[in-house]
Length: 459
Image (tube, rainbow, N blue to C red; front, top):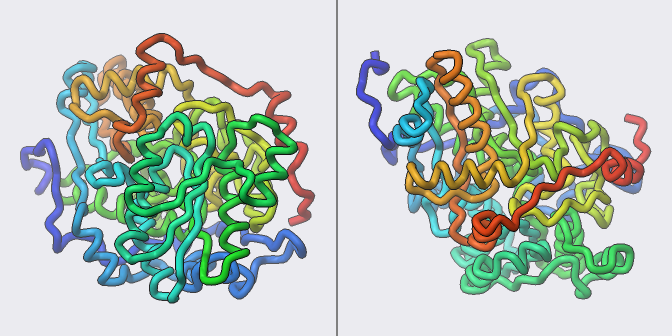
């Protein structure tokens, strides 16, 4: 069988082996994610209501929890071919450095100009916006990977792109900002004085460093007050997770090509799209009773929505203008500390990931940022890739699990998602190397403030 083959450093699929469909894990979920609710009526959102904010075909993908596969349009597949299939890499050097019997693999999504997995959904959402005849789109971005990817996609389709970037990331990552502007995007630090909701947030929280929830509110207001524009989101929504399943589908195909059966799959978790995209095909097997895996979501200790949040209906944004989603949340009013994993600084978790977690189909751990950067540098020094701070959360736990195998002598196979590179995160690496980085873990009292603002929903 294929398992007798020598495993190369990098497992590449052929172009012909690329996925032609996205996989909708909701179709196999016995307990479906709860529906989005209209914030005014608290009734499930109707397609025509969501179409005021989102592109029409994306709304159909968002609401469909029965269709198992969606065809990937040829124009999107042609764009994917510029950087996909992405490699599944055997971390031989890391294994040797750890002196572990574990076999470690990582799916590397940083081999494109945007530097991360975000391009997988950005090009899809830009395609549907162009197909609908829109002038442009608005969005939020945390660390800047999503904004960078969307600016690239909009440039490709000749769409206007307006990005609201979380203020602390706007200041920490000026080069990421300039890449967006190079591709033609307009970038505004959030919260800003340019929107009514931004001014309201600044009045309530003077000097705030912002959050993804704040930036989402501003981007939604911008889109809904300008004709010919729609809002697009880089994570959290089911449609985004759907597009990201190309990661998991390719990972599984590469593993199957060499007869490799992983014991555990690990991914970083902020809004949940990259994690959900990586794990979906494997969760599908678990749901259908075909196989079993240990699946671990890794989040920052400073923004622990899964490990310390509440499973409840909440606003997806700080300004409370978006639909309500049932998710593990810290409360839409929770403002995370300005840590250096900006892409994980979101108060809630994808409804799909939240339901899977509540059904105990995956587990979650939180880690502190100094330990994350220690793991990042340990990885970089032997594997030759400087990882993004977000991805390094998964690296941290993968190393921990490999060291446990060293203690027990177990030869487990570990797969984790390396979602992007950290070459625009040098301020953060500098803080760590200079010993100026600190850890922040919110107290129960800190979290109580966010929980107090949860909407009263009897569903």
